[in-house]
Image (cartoon, rainbow, N blue to C red; front, top):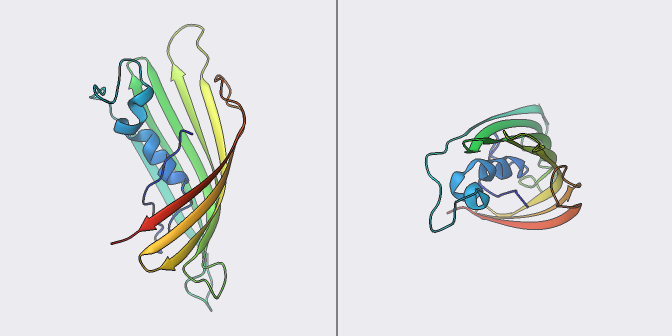
Length: 175
């Protein structure tokens, strides 16, 4: 689906909503280049770089329950995929850590991300896609979390991909 998973963390140690993780995969050449012209898993394209920035801020912390907080994140990144093609990614969302007094290590969040691919060739329109996600992270043990998520990807402009509804399940194991 163009997304990814990885170990995003907020300043208070709570996992982010997964959108940052998807951005990370978009910008990792070893994962993102599989669809690039001339690249195969056996013969990847090398010498391509990119960058991204990530801002996250706790907006509110419950004075009575220190583990409960509301955070905001924003992200932006770019990566050239070919000499005449570049990918831009940006998104944001909010996350509530400790949503219930009985579940202080859980988190719930919503987010959105957008990916735009531009090709510098006459008559080639950009491909622009948007995704929306909601998730709940269950911290089952100090070392184990399970995070179901639900995503909606409206029809992507400039692509043959239609509307998609996705269900995901992430497992996090900390050693």
